[in-house]
Image 1 (spheres, rainbow, N blue to C red):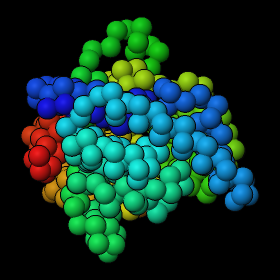
Image 2: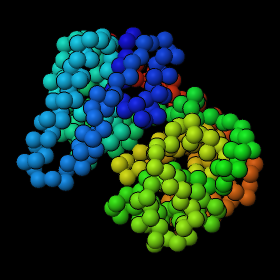
Image 3: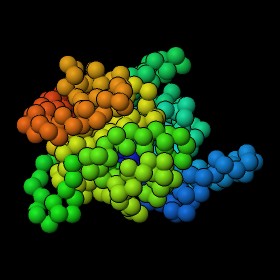
Length: 348
């Protein structure tokens, strides 16, 4: 089978699915429209929502035409049995219809809710046209069902063992990265930034390192205990380096993804693959994916210090828990399970 992934190449899931479908014996191509569009245009599009409507409308018409002509050229030049699309990837209904006239099936993996995604006004149209939709948040199934979209499944993609795995760091690498707690991520302009910083401040006493951008500065001013935690990174940290960093640490604090209502942050699975124990802000779907409280989760920030302290003082318990989580994901939610779930759900 020939499968085309319409997924940003910068996302770890692009490589995860490429590896998975290839290992299952399929021919896989990755097409990222950003490779055909100037970086400046992508940056403008990320900020255009701030402008008056008449400017936004003219920009969107131009930008969508540019991107979708790139899609049309690709579709006409390549055969695909299945297009696997992450979110909407700026697709228009006309291009989705072209895919179907070529005999292709359409599957969508939702990473963001269409109710809060401002980049593509056609996102919901795409979901109506898809042959199957896979969601990481059980609440989205209820939302889409309300609209009459019933081709929806709950979906966990696990981690990519080619990237996220246990390795033995060198002494030089330990000298550079070793710490008890580590976090990687940008911070928000809104009060979500305060919430994220508050969450991480509870780990400050354990030697937390935050690999983030300058946007952290505005919030750390209110949490001086984090003054020595921030390590500013101007460039994106690739998966292999992040895996190494995790292998030099013991705990990974993971706050909830604000775009998910019940769902689990993908970083939880990557952490488990790397062999670091995630300490996770609670969300409802944790009970489904990690039954019997096998994943340390936080229902009150007031409990963070006690939980983190326990696992740092009890190395054997921490290592046992991490290995149990890893075995659980491999057995029930591996990346190959995810790829097989997609293929089993699409009627060819």
